[in-house]
Amino acid sequence: MLRLYHAPDARSLRPLWTLEEMGLDYELINVAFPPRVTYPDYLDLNPLGTVPTFFDDDVFMSESSGICQYLVDKYGPTPIGLTPDDSQYGEYLNFLYQSDATLTFPQTIVLRYTHLEPEERRLPQAVEDYSIWYLSRLKYIELKLEGRAFLLGDRFTIADICVGYALFLGKSLGLDERYKPNCRRFLTALMERPAFKRAQERQSS
Image 1 (tube, rainbow, N blue to C red):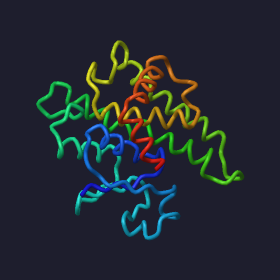
Image 2: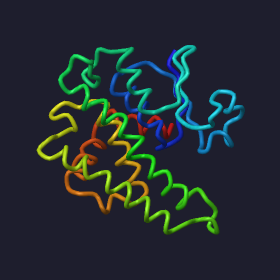
Image 3: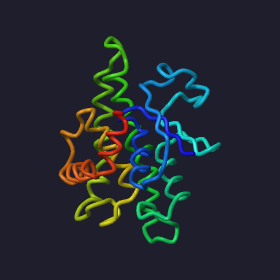
């Protein structure tokens, strides 16, 4: 039984979107952020207190991009997951790992010091510094999207989900005003996908 604990528009949106793209059966438990405070006994489920928390029977996972890879590898074959014999497999993996380690990480600093900390603890300089850090990392994404519908060309994969979520999070933080044309086009197209819209609906139910 696939079970996902998800907070609205948090990183758990990556596996939720993947589940919808693949058409898998799953149980969704929507939790308020931060779940370690709002959801009873959440730390018993996930000692980190973070989202996502994902179970496949007795398999536990907490890393959003890793869950996406797990789903396509275990429950594929699927067009949105690549295998090691694919010529673009290395590029695909690079995007998966880059999505969180390089792109989402600086955004978490921006989120913390604009929304999560009390007013007196907010740090405008840190917000601007990490915003610039994040936007500078998007230069590679902007370059790879030149002449491409998706990161790997004409085929949509979980690499687009994982990187696309970072762009989506940036939009919620107001950073999209500084996106370049290819990133803007890419994000707009991703948000029009039926599975993305279903994921948004599921998190509101």
